[in-house]
Image 1 (cartoon, rainbow, N blue to C red):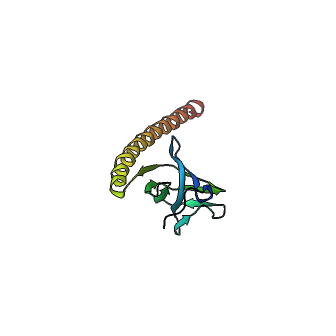
Image 2: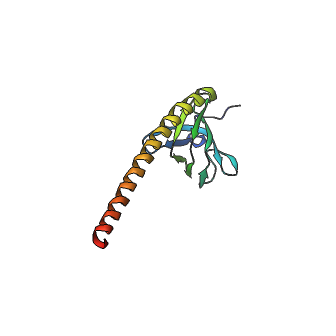
Image 3: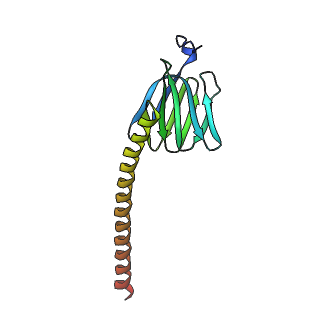
Length: 142
């Protein structure tokens, strides 16, 4: 028998936050999240707590009883009363696993390329700064 979603005590306010956007902001009945020592399940009346999340698949059941999924990078989960917030560096949401895999491939590879370019630019900047300091040192001690 599905849970009685008409009672607000049987739901949680779930927010999945990324650095650049709010990926999920809705009422849910259940959340299953990945941790370093395995998955754990959150229901509305569970005690408040904080947990470090491992990269993996987070699932949640919406008010209509549909299970949805989010692939997340490592992050943190905070439950305080009816509010559950997950903050992760990267994430994508999908209705089914196959759809989610395609989104992961597309978005994470795109981000990896962006990060590679940013790291390369930073390395060039650091090398240029170091050369500048060495030139100054040679001019003053040379």
